[in-house]
Length: 109
Length: 113
Image 1 (cartoon, rainbow over the protein chains, first blue to last red):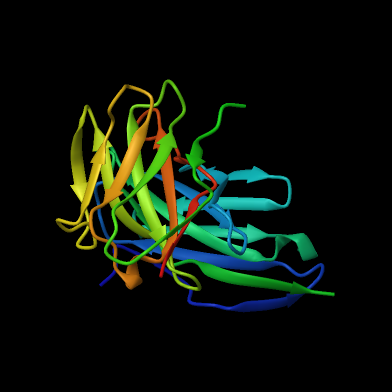
Image 2: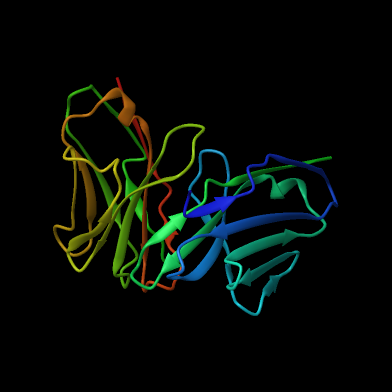
């Protein structure tokens, strides 16, 4: 079993749609969590951190459920520019980072 | 905003040759990482480095690979005898503390001929 598992995707949605990505982690030592986006042939870029209380940044909402070891990312009113691969990351306090395989989103006009 | 820088942006090397990829992490960061991504595939962890030693490495990081922080600013990845399958994008990343996110450089594309 992978340490961090994501929806395999791909997700193809129309502009304006709401889309949700799920991620589960198996390492109970994981303490901090992040979502990155990666555009084709580019480096991963931090999208947002994920806090236990849930957090929002504009159209993006991230949630964490420690009991279920589950993280989610919700994108509302999706734009063409949201098309990318979204990576879920779990960190331990020892400095280990584990990336999910990523979920590809394509937003179509 | 400070950033991680990598050089060169593209390296073309003959199979069997040694290659060194260079990274300058963000100056107050303490944890350093190398990842690779073969075209069309996922980001794969290679190695993490803290306090001047490797803290973790993956199965990919075999005896052909080594890392070094020679002068307190550069962080290098060396591949001793390159193989065709080493062709990939190599990303360096750094972070200040374990619970902080990593910041990535924009990568070095390594092409082995």
